[in-house]
Image 1 (cartoon, rainbow, N blue to C red):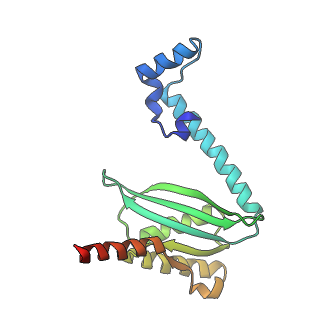
Image 2 (cartoon, one colour; image 1 turned 180 degrees about the vertical axis):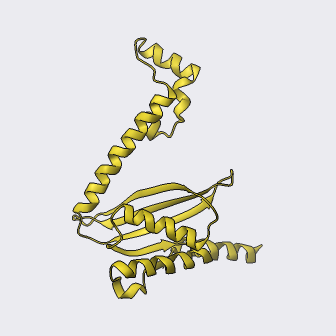
Image 3 (cartoon, rainbow, N blue to C red; image 1 turned 90 degrees about the horizontal axis):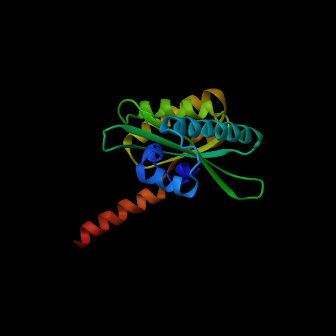
Length: 184
């Protein structure tokens, strides 16, 4: 659990000083290999994913989503999809439902396919109310594609006019950056 909660690398269990520390606390404690630790953590992930999937099935509300995509310093593309809803006690809830490596470029069609496939996998395709994205032009293409796919299976609120929500924080950041350029 410490590896998960503190985002330690799996191979911490092989670090000499870490092993020495654990052995000083409890000499008989069995140290697992990084491969076993990875397997155990992935099993925990799969269990938690099943629980969340089952929980989302019990909810009768609609869901809003956010998605972001970026390129790492290793030049790999990643996408994160978060689902948001208000629970029965009127508390805002959010969960990351997908964090993945995406082959290819940040094209709108690539993003649309990955987003839509993820939403279908989570059985949320008929219960979406909106998707919040930043102002990249590829996001406009993505949203248009998602709306077309969603309209085929279920009507959207206001026929999808308000489905694409532009990220206010991103817009505010752009305004602040422009203002700072003017000041300098």
